[in-house]
Length: 86
Image (spheres, helix red, strand yellow):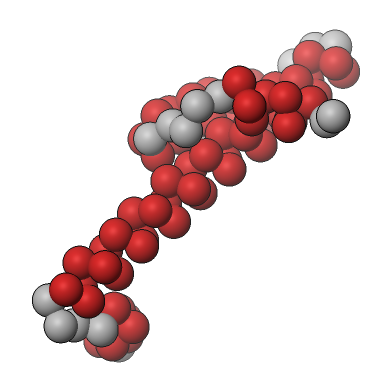
């Protein structure tokens, strides 16, 4: 079993804001380029992957909910977003 799979099982589904708040300092640490052991760097990277996936899942769920709400009001989500973009 891959380490990210193990971490994904340990990490509950996080709200988008929480995942983003945890991801930002993690990315900052990796971008600084400070010398840290490779194993620790890989652990941080794996944690970041899990956080990104959690955030994407939360975003997809929010998008689906918006689409459902628009459909309930008789509006097409595609036409609404197209009008907003144009």
